Image (cartoon, rainbow, N blue to C red; front, side, top):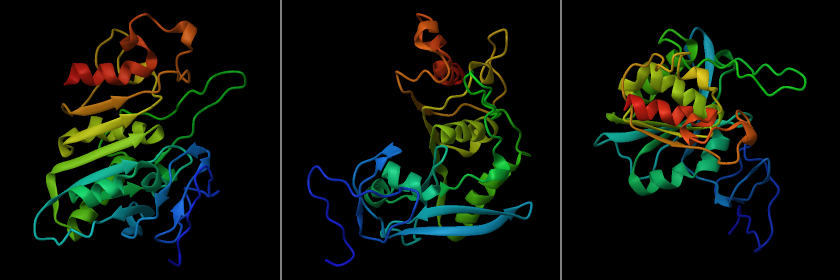
Length: 254
């Protein structure tokens, strides 16, 4: 029973989900992102490598006990939100428990500062996200992600037909970026609460902006999120909300 923390009902252990805690500990986060109790997974590994342009990349990978390399297994790539980390995404999403049940491998990339332009915030105004979701395969963030996938493929028996990507908030934006330029590499995407402005998806004439191919997509939003469209400015048709343009885009592409 050593190395475990048991939380009485109605209590929390104050901790930081971005900081690794010992395997087997039970942690409950009640600040920042409000999260449920989790037992720290034992098969999570931190990786740091130079993959692209001489810049070090870092990520976490989770390999279930059932993996023996005898047959190809799916890969799920889970991308964290702003202010989080790959480890924090592992803790927040519970993908590791699904991986144990279903037998797939999970990749949790850390945001590389070389791939991110911070939002421009003017006094008294809402954030204007400088993140461009329409980039080419030459963009650093895309090349880094491809290199991470190739690295895992070199060490594990990955089923290239079943590579999925999922992200929340900033991770949603990164997922969308990769899906637009490298959709043929993905079997599907999951997006949650990505605050990309409407002009990222459609031009001034309402036509779809560039994309490589169709991608099966699960898209979700926070119904009371007014980061992009204040409630008093929302049109009657929900798909015309700025927050919903992502969903409308994939409905038309697919």
